[in-house]
Image 1 (cartoon, rainbow, N blue to C red):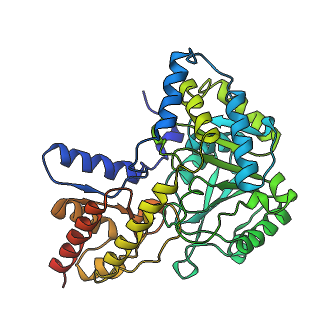
Image 2: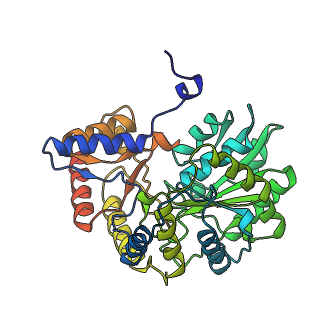
Length: 394
């Protein structure tokens, strides 16, 4: 029996493939440094663990409403009001099995065959694949390095056709760590309003910013933009809860209702225990990311400086998330490799450093390094990369 055509179009996740290869080498006894991880290397805070334990002991282990328990929805509403100056009702919020599932469900309910979604490149690896799974067509727009990996209003407008349904904005960005400022968001928002495009604002990294820049949600800029935006967020990055799989979406009630109906026939509900842990994360949280931000800031500066010292590698300094996205064009050329992918594979084979080629993010000349690992590992990784580059220097 053959598999479905829709699944045949999928491109496997580059990040997961690199992570799997690194684990395989580790299991064989090699000293592998993995810089591919897309998750904080901190454990979930203790007060959240205690809330999960209490939920289990108190019998909170049954089915819940498909769109999430009322208490968690209220905690999310409070979070939006407190952090983003956004006011939603419970019917405008759905709790999902991770932010990735929120995106997947959203595409399933808004797209018909042939609908187009504009995706700035570099992009998170799952955006185009999820659009394709919903019958849509991803329209990739190159956010140029000289514009700090952000698309311009002119680029957006020239990419719009009669089939365009939505625009994705990811700020801070995975993989670049770059952010759109308020003025840039306003200008993009004006075009979306003019053409009636839905804005999908992925804000999963909003708490992980290492400069004085403030996170701005495009939905908070005007009532009109709020009505035309679906905000995607979750607790995976902000509270080191990647494995708990709790995300959420907030937006127009019609869309949220459709997503909830879909959930009732797919996941039934997000895990009950994880939901009660998430309530504590938002209700008891003063700012659990303070220590993470401090550590990530130190790692960012250190790794950035070390990469700057490697011949043929240039890098824009990111403002958020926990990735560096250097351009390795010259290093690859000088080392005698035909592509970044080939260079990355050789680096793993020879120096046992696992990084992700930019091709998986729509950027053939770049590499992604996660600094969600110890300072010791980052320093050693940079040392190995430099040794590799110098060894292959032509």
